[in-house]
Length: 78
Image (cartoon, rainbow, N blue to C red):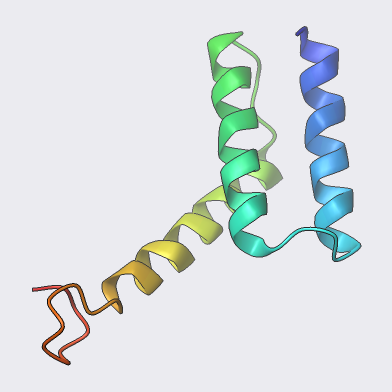
């Protein structure tokens, strides 16, 4: 996969998200993978995609903290 393929993949990913074809967690995972590949190729990362990935990561980390891992009704996993 070359740099142009990665740029096209990122664009298609955003279009799929905007069209409602993908859920937020799917977008986050695919975007993270695409950015990781771009990093591996030494490509410059589009600031808007990095910002979106960071926003989605914060969102899902927050949700993970709400999961009741112990079944004690606390909801913070501690």
